[in-house]
Length: 112
Image (cartoon, rainbow, N blue to C red):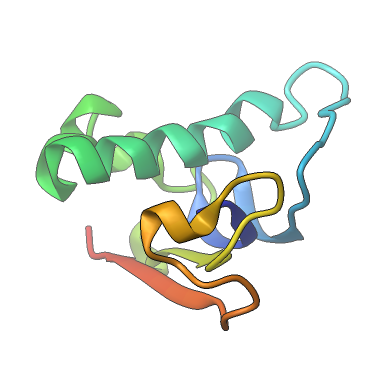
């Protein structure tokens, strides 16, 4: 299931990020612009699914390394992901997913 939309609040260098995704994106920016932190969102989500939320936080160095340094613990860390139910170029019937179904919303509440 491809990710269609990502919304992040209080994650690393991002105060708030809201982005629609398609099949291909290129990250361009100066040093310290947030490119690596953008990729870290997906690594963090991967780690949550593989190892659970507690271990994923520990793998990132702890909660103080996940939250925006300016905002800190004054606001919750929020990661919201919208997944596409079907994908082009694949036979989604093999996975038991019908094409053109509605997107599912997965909200990962992270309370630190």
